[in-house]
Image (tube, rainbow, N blue to C red; front, side):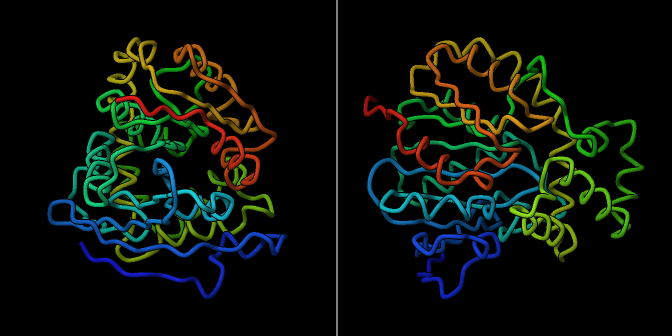
Length: 309
């Protein structure tokens, strides 16, 4: 593992538009964590309490938490890019799946020596967090779900571009589209705008997403592989759905109510399958941690964590 200290000199792209000078970017330690032959990029913010492990979905990276982290000052925080995304390695022939992302999470926690965590899942990291929590409940202090999915919720609406890439009937078409940068960037721009990222407060998110897909190496292999795995993951998680009723760790559901895809009905379904969970619907879109970071931080830090093994 390679480690370096990072004291920010300038705000990151998603922090430049913060309106209050009282909120400053935090220093963190950078880590390059080995996962087989590849490296996972992680950031560790020193602090107290169980580590708040903030996980991204796709097509995002750890920067979706840039506005939230300053409000978590004093608390231990870990963010990382799953293999294939952000600053982590992007092997082109790697079999990216939700199950393998659980291995990414495990590698980060093992390497950083973290024993107790508050798992915070957004978007496609929901299955990663929930399945890992079911397998290792003794390490979970709490589980927080931000506009995410797990299994076949009645009102779940898969975003159009993801549905297109997930359909095996269109495999040849989408691979050809991925080879045409202009076509691919138009697709993702359109989809991210449908999710709400065209709003002024989220303009830089669109830049980050498009940069990841336009870069070399590109995040396209991870996107194609994970979308191809989507239906199999949903089917497997649906079979595991009854186990959620017996999960005895605190669960808090924090959803932006204006998300047209991972919508309030999905949040309510989570509330039903986790009988002891708490549900909070905010006036926000798909990224509540960007739309309302101060309120999300308040709800996150007030989660009643457990210390039992």
